Length: 157
Image 1 (tube, helix red, strand yellow):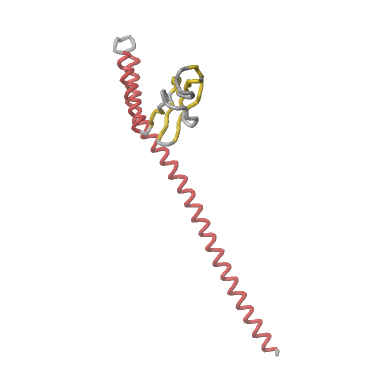
Image 2 (spheres, rainbow, N blue to C red; image 1 turned 90 degrees about the horizontal axis):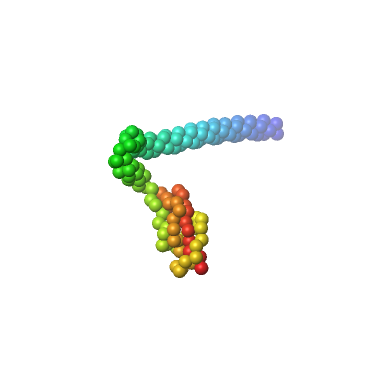
């Protein structure tokens, strides 16, 4: 009977050692996975920051010629071509923003949309109620994202 207990204890000891090795392997594997995930998270954050920086640089490069033109216009503000120069600068500035995806939100004559328009004034008129009859400040969007709502005046009955 003593030999059976010793043999059983030996098997239990071997089984326990095997389980401990398995637990150690799983723990090591989990620690490597955790470290890999942390490295991936840091890489994603770094890539995002780099992409944002590149985006800003691209936009600024597009705006620099406008900045140069504004400096030239301000140097010749006594000239009769000053207004014409400012109009050209405005046109180029608007063009750069449109290339970046900026679009004006249409307002006047449209039905009020609270996601696109902010009512600033109401006025009695002969049009359908909540029709926009004036725009106090333009609204803009990039794709489906509203950057700024239009500030509008609407018809009230």
